[in-house]
Image (cartoon, rainbow, N blue to C red; front, side, top):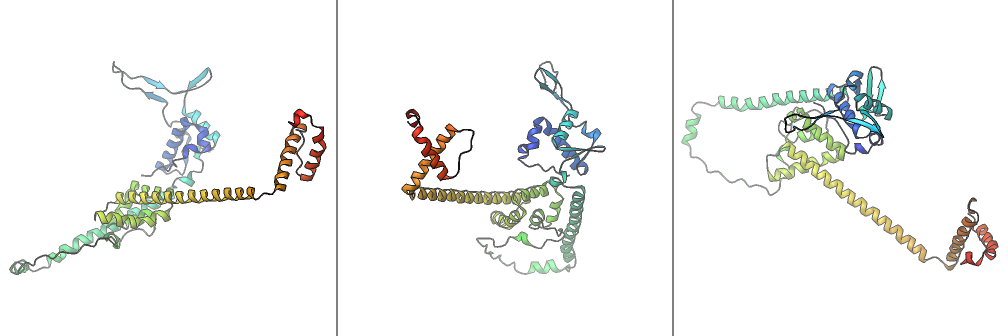
Length: 345
């Protein structure tokens, strides 16, 4: 089984925002078709034109019958029934799909979805990991049985004749420095992504690589927080869970890692916000100190510029305002005596 990778901000993308809600269903169904059939983004013409249904069955009424509603589109006083062909043409016009010989291809499909080669490679790795892990488990189960079979028949009787020693309490450390799950794990692929790193924490963890949902959850964490962050939190998360319950479950580990990564992201966001705030405060203090340090001459020049620009925009609105202070000041000196009293006020 493959999964469709969709960003939780997909609706804010300019093309999808332009397409509108009515087009999203066909667009998503097209991606699901490609992932399910490993077509690398290609959708045959006949398939594209039959995606979705524009009839909705209403709830049962008192007489036991159901109304069937047809979804339509309208503009002003004119309208017509909705059909997939109109949606497909709109997706092509916006640029979400590209028209190719024999059908359509989803734009930039391989940038966000796994290709056929990648899916087949991962499946082969999982199958090999499961096979090797199963052989290792089978060998471990047979070893104790062989050892018991070699014991002499008189061994149980001799064991009963000896006094039974009293069990001694085993001290339990307050903290777990290294969880038991960190034993060597055979049969896992050499690819060291987050899912594989997590499976290494469990005995026979290779079988979890066959669970597409579990692996997909780790891949999603990699996309949201980066692989480096996720892998860095796996061992601390396992140790924290192991300190509470020695039987750590794979899904609990994934959720704990997600929580730790989210906490780390929030901490970094708060630190960045504090840094930005400090920079803004420093800039504000610098401006205030600069204003306080301004001399009387600076204030006089600023007042001349303000008055000159205001008068220039009133007298010559279509001409650009001079940028040279001396030129602006000389012009103001020429027109200032000519200003009416009402305008001066």
